[in-house]
Image (cartoon, rainbow, N blue to C red; front, side, top):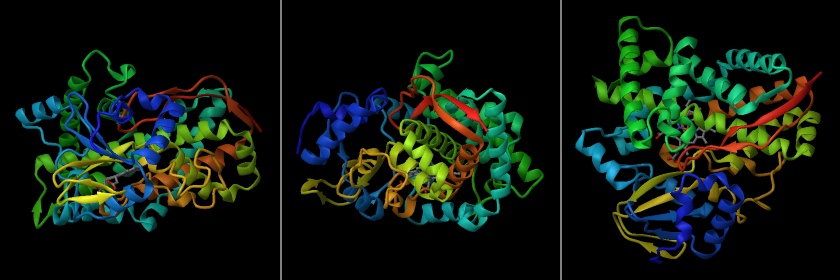
Length: 414
Ligand code: HEM
């Protein structure tokens, strides 16, 4: 199907995701009528938006026919061309394929295995307890997104990284500079989102090169030491590879999880019966967290390139074209999730969520993300008697990683 269907805008316009009801209504119509939609919008090379679960799943798992190489996130052609001219080529795990990807991922794989993550449980619990106490100290009212979800998830990821607490504000600013660049709230003095991203990359470079030098000189047992001293094919990673490795772990590990927590909390509070169900049966938390991550789908898309022609939901896509995998849409596909627009902590197959992607690029940090949410939720719900929304949530403007950025909440503590 070739079209300039205006519905393709929902994948590009950073403000579109802020109106979830509209966004999901359009996505549902696309799943039914045009599940593989060719989108041609000014400034963007054409892409095919893939919205059904089975297609997103099949593409994710076939890393031979559907490659990651080149740009993995939707951006304006002019901006990508400009990056080329100034010699900036993002090269994270996400941008690699085949042996190169396996070798790089192998460097830190052990750190993210369930057993290694489980060893961090005491630390995660201590951090979670601090933030529940902070909520209580705030008198039971707060902006749950900014006061709890953001700093909690940041502190956990920085603690495994080995970044000291006093550097957390810098890391927060840099992550928001990269992912939140389309949101006026994060633009700071720069009025141009792209200038913001470039500026941020430069600052990440300075910060991480300093950290890498430090860990080479004085190795410790943290993740930064593993990356700084990482060897691929018997050779140390170069400056460029090291920078991008640090960047992907620091950024992918933070905003995603905080949006899952803040948006998941919003969903819970809009369904007080679900809060009570979880308070009455804390074991439900494992399932509840998967439902929260299905519901929020903080990563909105990744791109894949076809190495050969393929047919998806009856649509032929030529070799060389690119697919946009829409995780929020796939997560609302009624062929997999009964009554998909209902939020239910006891959904029987919530663990089929596709928010973490699939195949060789399946989210490296999924165990961490789940554990972070599974740890703080029961602590919080056991501490409060009542908890409810205290105002209208606000959504970040972002077409890549996003969700609820302000969540006014009021609680009475036991
Ligand atoms: C709810 C939270 C999270 C969500 C929704 C999420 C989502 C994703 C998605 C969709 C991908 C790409 C998968 C694909 O291409 O098939 C990914 C990759 C990745 N994620 Fe996550 N993520 C989350 C948390 C984390 C955390 C906590 C970390 C690190 C501590 C992390 C680190 C990474 C890395 C390094 C990759 C690249 C893996 C590769 O290309 O091999 N993520 N994530």
